[in-house]
Image (cartoon, rainbow, N blue to C red; front, side, top):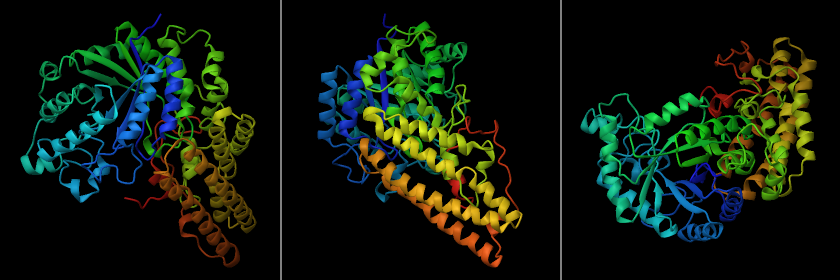
Length: 529
């Protein structure tokens, strides 16, 4: 018994990671076998527009031929391939170019009412229409919270933000109609109540009857609250869908357990409310270190619930997962332990691998959140991942193993360095220098493994960002060694270590199995603006 008319997934293809055409085709095969009937490509600017040469300039986007090839394969799989683009917000990558800079209201929101904006949007829609055969298109519109507060305010004065959004949509809808599209969009800005006098009835009157509006939430798992959220969304539009997500975008690991603990209650609430379409999103925020393949357990559980084969508490058919993917369910689920090295997580979301990996040896203090002796857990997880070959997903397990081997060395190092300096213990400082040299060797191995991992599934654009992040650590290792040697040999002062460190009072306190800190700038420097 199918519980939903449509079950879809969304793979983001921008934010510094663009899956190859072959990767998308392989994912279409898997999704089709699981029972998904729609795949959304989160394109943002990850496609080429011949009228807009700076749109996706050197960012690896798809050509018309690429889109057509993926579309043809999707049809063979019985899956509808749909573009999810942005027509208002999340377009910050364009503002860096002078050709677009004055078309923006804020850093990432286009200027409502500017004729050039709607020419750009028509070029977007035209490009998609030439590549994909589906006459459904998702136009984004989410998280435009600052609309009307930037250059729009300077030029035209204060405006009701929801009135601005509706005015914008009245310019976009005719473009979609011209190319034969049925519209889909995110619903968060439609239900905003701050700084607006626009009523739900006025919003509903503006939205076409055939439009599909997605209520999205990636954290809520209280069924009663979810039912209330759906009721509220239905005041603003005729047709509602729901989008949940896999938290694969905050660290090196996928957080499947946390994601599943949200997806199942959301699907249950949607089923009660007769919502016909549930979407599982795979975003790639924060330069996407985690593979989309690591999210397969969450996608499978969602599919089994949607197909009426699993209710969230019974026995999951793991053999079917193996037959579809070629890898054992529990092996893939073990990738959660990248961010739960102590195996104590009870469904939390965590990015501990990220902040433990990148926190600076001399400046950092995020190591304060790590449990004493955790390096042994990292080493144990490395051995476990090494034993799991993973079939076609060996590159995913190899990268996870390498992260653990780096952290098995790095995790205790900042505290060792601080205490050696505070105690003027030169023998301990010598030991720290030895450990930093080991860390450099492991980091060098990691960089090679990560490059292969990234290139296995993605186009090379965006890898340069990881080179800067990861290569920068090698430079800092050399610098830390030089400073420690000067301290050991000549007693020189190390300014970065003077005064100790202050704890960062996050609430709840992050731990190695529960955290969601993804600000790279705080990990490497307090001087970045």
